[in-house]
Image (spheres, rainbow, N blue to C red):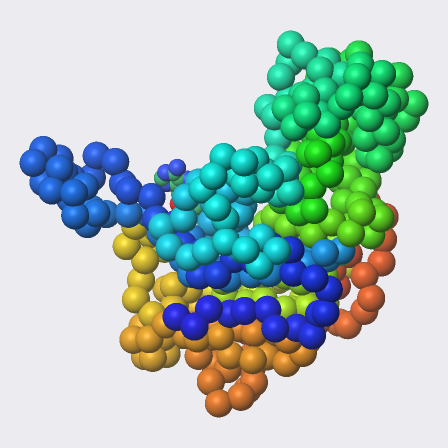
Length: 383
Ligand SMILES: Nc1ncnc2c1ncn2[C@@H]1O[C@H](COP(=O)(O)OP(=O)(O)OP(=O)(O)O)[C@@H](O)[C@H]1O
Ligand code: SF4
Ligand SMILES: [Mg+2]
């Protein structure tokens, strides 16, 4: 497939670039006995297609959101970008240079590219206090000259995540903090080593709706004040529109649509993106959402031929089963891997009620002007 790539005219520096990133996990126990040994030797056993041929560029002072439903490969992509797992194919370039194997270069990479996980309670050790958690990165990377220097740096990083006064938090244990405060400590730990790229894997999905916005705004502040390149992973396209400059929509391990966040959410060109938007919560919606075109995601072990969305797509045509759709331009640096856009953007896209995102009163979901009522895309009959 010609992978959708981001070619928006964004001139800020690309810090981290992925080219054709692919990760296939072997299916354990699928082949038994001698057959299993042969399959392992040939590398020919069944595999989970977690991520297939994904390309993206993370730029300084920009947030790129990766949106998709459960199992679409978002976390695997983040782990690949963090260098925690080895790609099956494709390459990662940091400042234009391929990732090196030497221990020193790997440590530098880990310092530059930091990750924040979904569950702050699980990512913090319950038997250690905030001071301990924040002292680790400074010690591991040799960034503190003395005890006083370490304490000063810990206080400074707590201030950067708005946990002030620092003294009030230093000796608290994870269970003594709110969910939002825990996630701020996790973000502070990532910031301690002064990364330039932050990979945030569903950083607010486990938080109360009332405190999500605070953490999203913190990420926006860090983007602006520290020129951080941020990857924001979410299944909530509304919060992606609020926070991100660019949105990449993933389905079954592949990029299906990408482009400027407002353009993608105002004029979604791919039927899957339209489905996601039609399902986004809307406080103004008076009738319940009918997920027309809904159904189950395909098998990750034996994905369908051609377009992986075709078994759920109400617009599926014969070519959709025969050939993988390449990335077609959909206007304004926006691309969509859908045959409906072949020969120009004769898109089935509907335009959502255009509008600039506004701060939500209750939930970040309210920031998108979702497709509602008469605007709703015709996604065919319910399946
Ligand atoms: N270590 C692994 N071994 C085998 N399969 C894996 C492994 N990690 C992930 N997978 C599979 O890869 C696919 C993508 O998983 P991934 O966790 O990346 O999805 P996700 O989009 O992050 O989902 P969620 O929104 O539920 O977090 C899934 O089918 C998953 O079962
Ligand atoms: S029209 Fe075809 S290519 Fe486009 S999303 Fe539907 S099945 Fe995929
Ligand atoms: Mg995940």
